[in-house]
Image (spheres, rainbow, N blue to C red):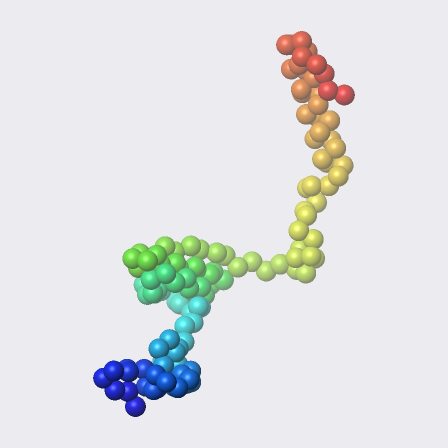
Length: 129
């Protein structure tokens, strides 16, 4: 129901019908975008086409690897690789590993104090207690 003077499909003196398919700005005819896909190996990931300004997660069907392919505004793509490793629930809940225990940190601080005091004694600098 559009005419020469009003290409949007509704009369200018009425409230616009936002559900009308010819309404300017409607997204009814835009394609649905998937942000992940399955590929066969690294060659499949390299040859996968990504739209400009889009990032796709490409999951390898052959191995536990995930690729992140990002294209800039010119369509030039970069590919990053991630390896999937199985972890147990305890590793997820406690991000602090055992190497950063309080005792080991105290030991390292004491070692650093000793090294500083050794160097400071050569230059007659104040010592750290």
